[in-house]
Image 1 (cartoon, rainbow, N blue to C red):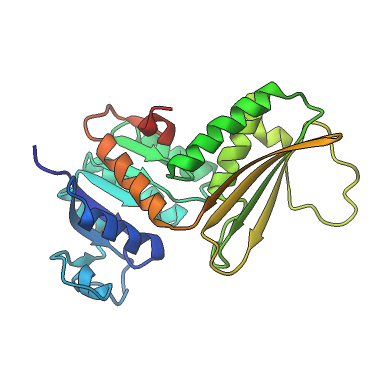
Image 2 (cartoon, one colour):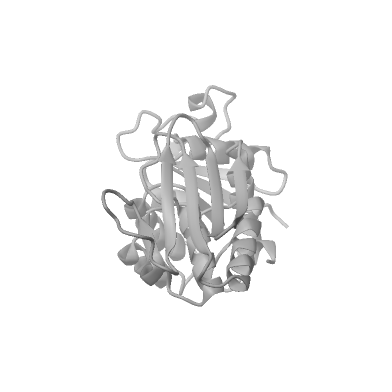
Length: 268
């Protein structure tokens, strides 16, 4: 069986380059395309040379439709508007679309849902095994504790991250809400400032830290009178996300159209 061909969008970004390296080094997949925005300096050049290494035989393009036509999967860690465009094109090409983009809003998610009627989409706020285990643990702990336990999701990322809370923090908050049997939108509290008054019982709080080159740190704090439980995951290498995304792209081959997440990929 031929190895699936994979296209990487946002090729010049930190995650894009990490993904290109992961696919190029894999013995289970082939790098068949790299996409960048129109006008980018990498357009028309070999992506390996652009990254400062050996030629990989793949030329960077600004035409995603052409790139996706020869692909079995697209891995996409870009921006919400671009991801929505890529979802429609990947569905048209019947390619598995692995989405690691965060900051997606209701309108973006609706468009992605529409694309998932025609193709396989794997979307997750975080692709790492450790984080997805943390999500599962958060749901179980929240289900075991009553509303006297306050829940706070604390996340830290590098200074260049543009959205807050992070996609992973929202995954964790959603898991806590599911464990408690409530809607996250009703329980969520973000960005406290000024005279906020006492904490409302049952609320799920979010705190975001941005600085330096922090890859990703997430704590879920359960606090009650006299005791605390802290669940923590620390990422020190962005390669864990690339490996997870590649695993998702391979897993998606042969699946029925629909939207999946890393819980499905990892069998959790």
